[in-house]
Length: 154
Image (tube, rainbow, N blue to C red; front, side):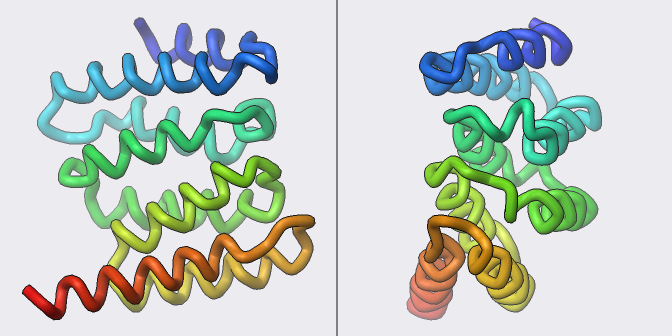
């Protein structure tokens, strides 16, 4: 499948079935990525679009793509993380799916350098004050501290 067909499938998924559709498309997306040594720009731009476009992030299931990125993190460069940080920072306050909020914070805690993750998670915690649900950034901070402890034990 192409990126355009992925977009179409996600956009056309009814909210009640979007979780399954997002999972299926994320699995196909991950299979595609196995063919590349680096993260292809059009695939990365697609993820950024998912995280920044309300038509995508307003439906349940987007968190599946964060799992894929986490699995393929060895293909990401510094510039990818910067773009992800900017996109997440700009859109996080509008995320309404709790699973997505938790997945974003978990991804940051497990994949960013400690200081950068801490700074980003604290800024997300500020955005959560305006959201109906809160605490996901603090969950991310707890995960970050556990990851730091685990790294120090090695």
